[in-house]
Image (cartoon, rainbow, N blue to C red; front, side, top):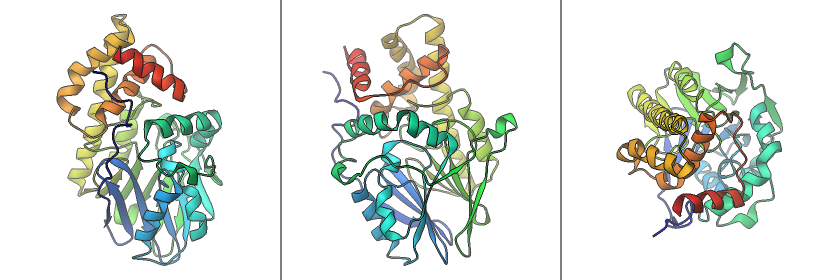
Length: 329
């Protein structure tokens, strides 16, 4: 029997946790659903990842309001995916004046934001249950430089003073997308990684730069974080647990890409490549949340990159289903 497409069968609500990680930093997590991070200063608040819809964002806002009445001035888009960005409009009523993204993320919204929005709405019916509340694409009002530090390019670091706490925002290098952006509260050693890092959840790589991703993870490791809000999975506390999440993500990325290269070198087709990847991935990762959703998209992208397609092909709702059907046939 063929599997339900993407996450269309995942309709059960998840338990949401809103927990304090340090004096000013909070994690909003939900059993493998996309996470958000919050930094609360004496003057203003930053939210990292806006949630999928304004209706979902209002739940996060309500939780923030139990601990602070300060304006939510900044919304950070760690990357362009719809489940992360389309809730941004809800924060404008809470004082938001800046939506921040990297140059790479801005370019990806221009290039494929419309297609990604439709694609993800069909993949995640539960997350987009209130899709009618989405006014359209989310566009950044502040774009920071997209240089790759691994190549000696300036990263375009932005420092925000929220009052009593500062947040550094920059693009540490490509990985989950070519525009990934992090928030780093150095004084409290708290890292908000977006989907560059996951833990005990599927690592979606459908739009990834797989070859470069491990080096970007090592750049994050060098920060020495004592707490981490990953893109999916529980908030990690203590440097050993932060490294555990970095190791988990690196193992996924490297295993996937190694197997895809082997498949490409053996001149397999995509379905055979999928079977080959599963031999190594299923025993290690097959139990985690959203694994079966991610893997077909991951193998498709990894197989493309292994064959020299450096810029990920655009996913559309039509391409999604064609790929899924071809692997289920």
